[in-house]
Length: 296
Figure 1 (cartoon, rainbow, N blue to C red):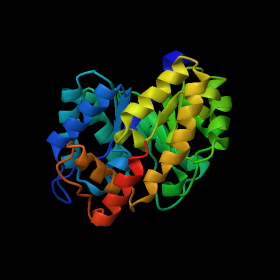
Figure 2: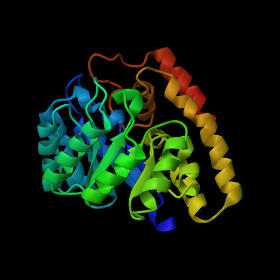
Figure 3: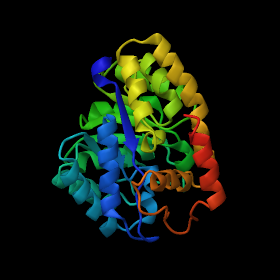
């Protein structure tokens, strides 16, 4: 269990305008995460505002990020797209740059059937040159990928090596662990919400890819270390802390706006800009989230 236990950050994307990425601020953020002991990054997950940024902007950051991180932590790149051809092209670009894997959310808007999911993720796996992590986020896609579908995909395509399961309760994630890892023990099952980290590990999973680590990676790494040390009191302390700290998601919509304000406070991001058409956090929202986080 310990060797696979990981806390990965789905990184926020620093922007210098509504459409342009602030690469230097992003690189500064990666160093902040590395120095805190985070295990990896997932660049251009939902927290990274990927649907609202151009292919050219995303490619520029992918190249710069992988070169800068230079194997100091795991690097996953979010490459999901409405068109499978675009997903495949971006995935192979990421692998050419040296990515450790890609994280693929399926098409959104119309829900996929099981057969549709088999077709989409199977086609990606067949045509990309590296490891694929499925990204299951039913609140955003309108469907949830069934554990037996994930198992069948992993059996057919050995380069499908894991899944990020972004569902608040653990029932679906536990079913994934029981269904897939019982047949393929190396398959990684990662939760998408911070407060599920310990529950995921205790159920036999591998950790999480969750956004609080953008702003308090020190707490996330400390929780992971308590789990590794089999420190029950420490694990319980951090579980209770994270049950409360999850409130940080509620200060702005989208949640990234207020979190970016915290990174500006920390001197990591130059600006709290969020992608079009979303609005930056107001002064009142930033004050409120700053006061809230003082408690941790």
